Image 1 (cartoon, rainbow, N blue to C red):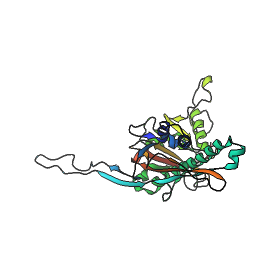
Image 2: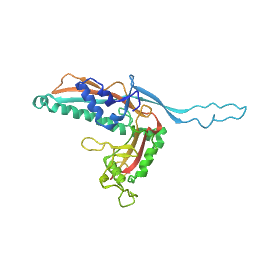
Image 3: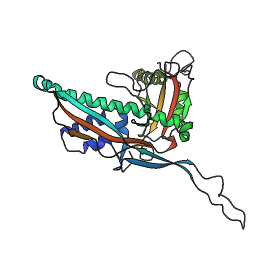
Image 4: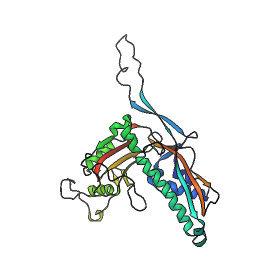
Length: 310
């Protein structure tokens, strides 16, 4: 992880022990993006950055004898993102606290994880406005990132994942060991495991890997050293859509985190705000003023129209 920025989980570990710290750690550890993404502090809630679009290579590199140099200027695109407010009210009926006090921590934990689930879903598919601009929105609607999408199938007919497609995805990324990840549905992660085994009849796995008996069934969850992580909640439900295109397709995402790659920014650490008891509840607000910034063209990429099947 680059110096100068910690992930939300790393920051929570430095906080003094308290109920608020426990809530923040539950939120920060619920889903992988919050565990892996560095957070820059922006007290004003606005993060501005430049993305280098193209090097100034067309002029200015040579000159004739007695000639003059031609001045050049880098080609950059400026972006600005404003924080979004994530979190919500967490409440427990006071009767539960009386008759089953052991359930109170579970209620708080479950409700906090639900807030993290919303953030993670928007991290991928948020459309801006009240929500984040998710990775999908940047790749689909920002001209600078238009070349970061590779179609495996078509909108009317998805195609199954092959290792060639994973090679293409990684070719679209600045791969940094320990900072680059592949996000997908559960079926796609199982498909990657199947591809890694080989020894399958048919044309979709056109090779025959040989293993020692003790290696049978082993897969380390990586492709070319990049972890493949299915984004799903505690029930096993996919957080990435599996009904795209022809109705049974999904998208695979590649992300490289870093303060100069894909980074988060926040006004401050998440707040846990105690509130006066109202109605029949003991409750508090959990509030996180946060945003996401893709700061290099090759920090995000995706494969679209991938059949969601093993």
